[in-house]
Amino acid sequence: MGDNEWHEVTRRKYNSVFQCLKFPSSGNNRYSSKEDQTQKISKSVFVTNFPDHYTARDLWNVCVVYGKVVDVFIPFKRSKAGKRYAFVRFIRVDNLNRLIENLSTIWIGSFRLHANVVRFRREPKANDSP
Image (tube, rainbow, N blue to C red; front, side):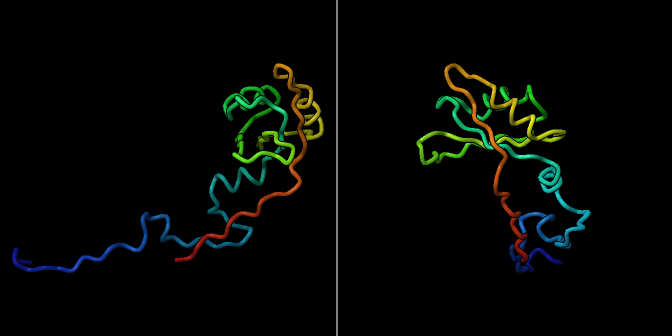
């Protein structure tokens, strides 16, 4: 190649190497991500009735006493009653009912937490094929 030769350069279709890899979508996928594996073994708990100024980190610190917390999510939306709510995900839970009972005994100032088992699990999104 000389200095005067031009070559057309096209943009790659994928932003990363991982996007171009195709993994089987069967339930027996040994290439699933750690997030998928964590979702299979974790238990989600719906928590409400906590102060408005509480952040996810504050709620994490309250709940970590009762089990191994993996994730805390507080949506911007409020419930129909106008209260904030959160989803706390635990792993290594032996007795979910006991965990719920323990979380329901927590007082944060004048607020007593209300905890319930998550009723509906969100289905994982299907990977978009290129």
